[in-house]
Image (cartoon, rainbow, N blue to C red):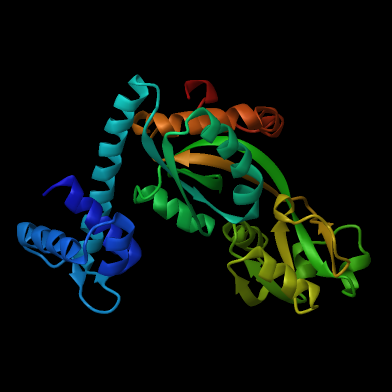
Length: 308
C-alpha cells in the first residue's frame, strides 16, 4: 500500500469514475485500475462495485475514511516541512456552506491568504452545513465553516447574525413589525438547506410547533424565489440575504429573536496543518472585531483564538 494508491482510491470515490479520476490526477485510466486492483488484492476485499458509476462497497466506505485521514496526516507532514521553508508549498481543503460563508466570510480571507501564501493550493467544496460537518469528520476537508453550537469539533467563533422571516409582500403578516413561529405555521413553508436548516428545525421543535413544509431548497435563491412568487414563507439568516433590489418579499424580525453563530471548525487543533493554522489566524484577524462583539455575553469560546 502506498500513498499514491490511496490518493487514487480517494479520487475514484470523489469522482465516481475511473476515467474522471484519471483526468483529475493526470494519469492513464489503466494506471487508476491497476492501483485499485492492487489495493483490493492487498486488503483481500472489494473496495468498489464496478459499473458506469462505480460505488463504494460498505467496507470500501469505511476504508476510504481511514485513507483520507492518512492522506491528511501525510499532507500535514509535508506542510510542516514546507513551513520550515516559508510555506512555499502545500494544500488546503476548505468546506463552506451557503451565502454567508461562501460569499461574505470566505472571499476576504482567501484574498489575504493567497497573497501571503501563493504556493498553497486551495480547494473549496460547498454544501449544506451538515454535509460540511461530515466532510470534517471524514477528513475530506481540513477546515470548514459550521454553525454553533457544535460539540464535535474545535471551533473558532467568527460572527453572529439573526434569523428573519421572509414573507411575500401581499402576505397578511407583511404589515406586522415582527412575527412569531406560530404565525408562520399558518402558511406553506419553504425550508432552505443552505446553512440554517438544523437551527430552524430546533427552533420549531423547542416551541412545540411544526411548520407546513412544502419545499426544501439546497440553494437560498430558490427559497427566496418561492417566497417572492407568493408560494410560501420562510426563515433565513439575515446575513445570507442579497442586497435588497426587489420589492417581491419583505423580511421581518422573529419574536422572540433568534440568533445564529458561525465559526470555523477543525477536527483537532493539535493535529491541524500549518496551512490550516494560518488560514484560521487570518480569518480571526479579519473578523476579530465582529467576533469580539458577538462573543459578549456568550460562554467562553471552545478554543482560544490566541492559540492559533
